Length: 100
Image (cartoon, rainbow, N blue to C red; front, side, top):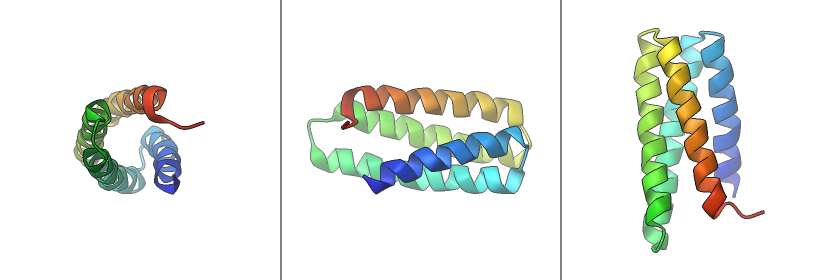
């Protein structure tokens, strides 16, 4: 799925931009992730029988939205922590739903 590849690429960009303390780029990445995770959440809601995926997508969307706020206020250490949690959440979902 192209969306998932875009999420992966944007997540990598986000981590890099947070590390560089690039407020504008990190904020844009986090906003884009928030939007994309909403799409994933909606997809799994409509698919049915994937409550865990819905919950993980929702958690990822909320983490991304939190990162938007943290970056906007220059709290890059906290944004790094949230981004790490976001990456772990992605891996958890992939364990169950990613097609090889």
